[in-house]
Amino acid sequence: MESKKEFLECERWWTLAFLMYVGGFFGGYTYSVRGGIFCNAQTANFVLLAMSLGSGDWAQAKYLCIPITAYFLGAVVSEEAAGRIKKFHLIRWDTLLILIEMLVVLILGFIPDSAPFQISQIAVNFICSMQYNTFRQADGIPMATTFCTNHIRQTGVFFTKGIRHRDWNHIKRMGFHAGMLALFVAGGITSTIACHQFSGRGVWFALIPLMITFLDLLYADLKTEKDQIDRIPKGH
Image (cartoon, rainbow, N blue to C red; front, side, top):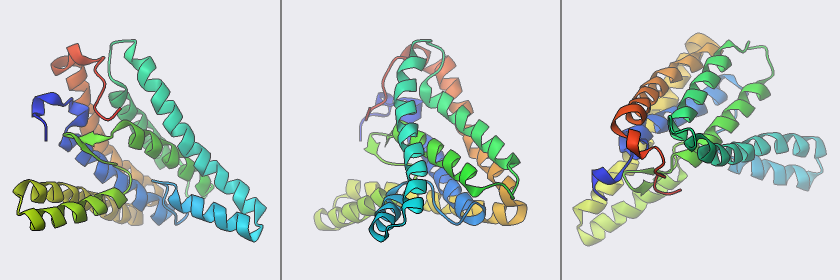
């Protein structure tokens, strides 16, 4: 890994760790009380789209284009907003995104349980896409915070390399990815318990890690990294 001085606060492992927890929380939330589906990524929707097209279910195919489009637009908006926000020299896009996520989560908790699930699902699709596109590395390690596939692969890769080469650095990298997986699971567990107890309002528990992350990034923007507002995070 590179020296810690190389990284902005939005690239530090603890920032990504909180967001990994939030990613697991969102998965548990949409599956538990918002339609029994996962909105963090789109692979399943593309599979369902292909199956719908193959079976001639045009109505389902057209519907599936909605969450896929929401995820697409999340990437577009986050990519465009990052450059525009930078011009104001106030806070980084990464910080503003966490604030946006908090506002969306707050609104989601007020949506009645009787409302169509698609409202919450599309909102989570959108913010997960922005989070995935914005936070790409933790201390120089490429990663995603809204799904686990790459972390499982990396855990296996570095486990094998660590055993083969007897290299402690590989074992540490394996532990890093395994830890992120554990945090994702912890987020899902918390979400499931909260939603079973408080139904849709259980999503508000995600505000705790988001608030901690927001305050940390805001302090960095206004104080410790004020002179680095224009600096582009690694991986972008």
